[in-house]
Every structure is written in C-alpha cells, then in structure tokens.
Length: 323
Image (cartoon, rainbow, N blue to C red):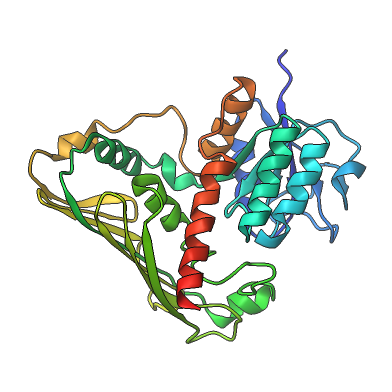
C-alpha cells in the first residue's frame, strides 16, 4: 500500500480550517500533526480525531513530508526556514511574506535545502482566469488599453478586534492591499507582469487600524495598458471581485471569477467554454493536490516562491507610492 503524503499544519487560526477541510477531501494525502503555540486545535477538526500537537515543529513526534503555513503573514518566513532546515517542503498561505527580504530568505532557505516552496493563490485554478491568461499570452484580446480591477470588501470592526494583529504593519504587513486584495494583485502580475509605473492614494477611513482600509492604484504595464485597482474593506455591502479589460477589439468583464460580459471581436462564449483544462479541483484542494504532485514529480508548484514574490513587490510599490 502506497504511503500517504503527510502534512503538518502550522497555525490554527481561521484560515487553518480551509486546509483541514481540503485535506479531508483528498485521498492519499493526510494531516499528520499540528503546530500550535497556543495548544488549540482548528475549530473544524473534530475532537474525536487523535493527532499530535506541539508548540514547535521540531518537537512533533510524527513523520511528515511537508508543512502548511497557516500562520499570520509576518511569521511565515521564520516558520518556512525552520521547516526547510528540517528538509520539509513548504506550502504557504498567501501572501508569501510581508517584506521582500523575508521573501528572499524563504526562497533561499528552500533552495539551499532542496525542498519546494509553494503559495496558495487558488484563483489561478479558476477556469475563466486560466483561459484569460492563455488568451492574453496568445494576443487574442488585441491591443489592451485598460485593465480595471475592483476588490471591494467589507469588514466590520469586530473582524479586526477578533485578532488584534490584523491591520498591523509588523504582523499583517499592511491593510487591504496586503491582505484581502492580494489575490487580485496576484492575478494582475500573472496576466501582465509587474508594471513599469505605479502611483497610488491610500487611507484609513472606517476602522481603528494601523494600515489602510481603502485605496486606489494606477499602473502602466509593459504592454502599454493602463491598470487601475481599487481595494477596500469599507464597501457595504461587499461586492464580487471584478476584472474589466478594454481593448481595440472590445470589452471583457469577469465578476466573481465568472465571465459576465464578452463583447470582443473574434471571441465568443465558446472560447471560454473550451477553457484551459486542469484535472485539479478548485480552491485549496487544488492547491494542495498540485503541490503534492509537484513534489512527487520533481517540478515547481503552480505558484512557486519566486512567482509569489512578485505580488509582494507590487504591494510595496503601491505603499511606497502612497507614503
């Protein structure tokens, strides 16, 4: 019988539940242990499940192949380097880290210890986003003039009070751009690369936090397109994330990762029905399955450390432009 691929979950906050639920759905992959500095378990893990828990990775009395980092952003780098030194592969919740130096340390530690580093940007698995990526690479959208992204979330004050590190620079690394909108920034750099020019305006309006809760950025990409990104946790009610692309051939709009408008010469809905296929499930299940396949087949995961670093670089360029 084939030995299961074994993960240790580091961190037991709210995002850890997504990984517990995902691991439960994947045959041949199992949760072998938990690192919890508070000693608590993820709330979605039944008390009936017997599993070793330790305050430090090196203290776990179980064999494992990789770690999942579900800790706050500012702790990722230390946990990743500890795992790498133990020879364990690292799958990290977004974002990779809160500074470029920390990103580089994580990437270097994993390379030096010959382990893989992957990051959970699961929206890259969405069929519409995968097809859009392919069409952009093929030049099928024509000359792109504008790319407008809206990431309009709402978070009440209780969200930040529940975990006081939220919205801090030292632990979260920033506000809505570093946190909720990081998936949108990842898609932007995946589609178009890092921009040549960035300007921005940010502020803190409705929340008692250290970092921004609303802002806008304007970018000029290598292809010539002008991009805009509005990111907020002040929008009540919250709205689906939206991407609008305008070119010399027409307009394409995706809302909630679903194609809602396609008025573009040379393209029809059948171009999106013939999506860029993948055998992976969506969400965290797909990220985990891809990561395990990457390790077992000696290839980079879907989003490696170097790739995930790009969105962190863009976030810091947005912050630098504002402040």
